[in-house]
Image: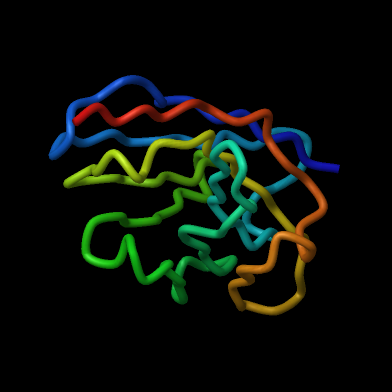
Length: 126
């Protein structure tokens, strides 16, 4: 089992930027597809970005395309989410999650993932 720890959340004004990090331990991250999810009160958890094992394939939620970038450094066992041009509607708890896979695919369904971090709060003020 792999453990994930998110960091980098905080309070930022609209239009600002944050970079979230997801550090993995316990297993080699290069065998895992990883997704970034978010959840705000009263809403379902949604995948904002996902990345394949190699980093060669990525997925973005339509509302974050052009603003968020997911990347990974398998040598550092870390996945990143660069968030630019943040909007108040981006406010949520952000989670990273991983699934061991033999395929170099991304996955955007929360039910696919086995291992989750504890989450980091992102608050965007208007």
